[in-house]
Amino acid sequence: MSKLPHIKKPCRDCPFRKDTLEGWLGKERTTQILAADSFVCHKKTDMQCAGHMLINGQDNAFVRLAGQLRIELDLSGSELVFDSKESCIEHHTN
Image 1 (cartoon, helix red, strand yellow):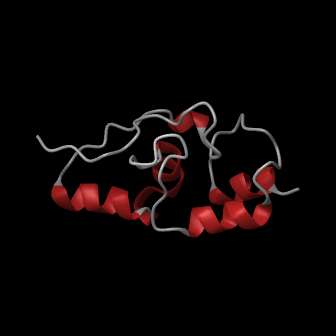
Image 2 (cartoon, rainbow, N blue to C red):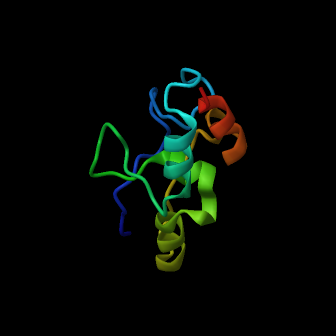
């Protein structure tokens, strides 16, 4: 089975995690990242970010591509990320 280059679970410092430091990313940058079609992990820049895929779902181009190719992403950790883009933006607003 083919694989796509992605992180399977949000890393400890993922900006989309609920337990990340409040306000550190800022409202504008968080909004920009969440609006992007996809986002690479800030630690492993050759891999797609699990947190971005989990919070954006079908709005993430990588998730859509995997679906079109019928490739399972095996994502986990949805309980770690914010329930909505709005709550993530609010958390990162200074």
